[in-house]
View 1 (cartoon, rainbow, N blue to C red):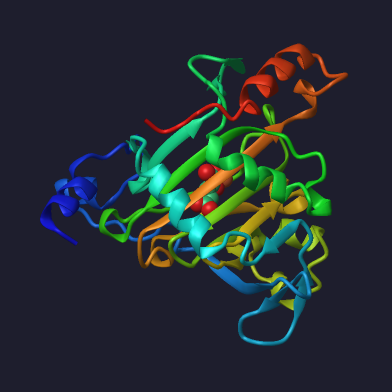
View 2 (view 1 turned 180 degrees about the vertical axis):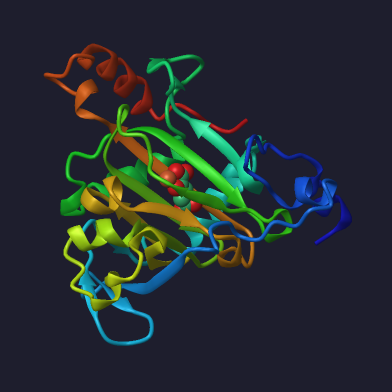
Length: 285
Ligand SMILES: O=C(O)CCC(=O)C(=O)O
Ligand SMILES: [Fe+2]
């Protein structure tokens, strides 16, 4: 990496509140490792063929519905073109050492307000990808109104903390296309809740407040991941710093919730958003 590139990677940071990246940690001369290490974890790996989470130290497995992994969704040439196109647009600094490009309506989640703002549609280059993804039965009728591109880099200590995506505006399926390097999405849930979701395990009889179930979902380069059902609404998801060994880009596509779909109280707003989004009129300058 040239020094100009390095400067670019570390020159700006978008962290607020408790979030941090390598830049602000260096500035504060404080090195914060991945958070939450005090919790005892039951670690599983997701097996896409079995659609189950399998204990890392062998033994039990747990049905894990709500994840679809589509390997080689992109060809190598498509990946190259997408990355080239994304890098023509400005990457804005975001939380925890990420950079971001957002193609979607302007949203205030706290006040539950959404408006078109300057949104002109999803990027033109995404049209064939959306046409391809909807061939998958689980994505039938998927109509994204937002595409959010993220740029992770180990030089900035990029990560994303465990979270659930909003479900007031965003609908049932979250779709992410992974580019440039392999990574791991870590899904987590307190053991007591996992038990409720049928974790048949003898390990849950210790103090359950401190016990967390973690499921590592492998995200191969050029794959597409769908989260829905339990994996969308109950399990938090995160990308840990240790799982960003090289630059990684991803595009997350989000559909509308039932509130904004036909029959819902905000159906008219939804129609306007869809009309603009699916014009695919954004082209990088
Ligand atoms: O980087 C990823 O794959 C996940 C991104 C994510 O969870 C989000 O933007 O809400
Ligand atoms: Fe998310």
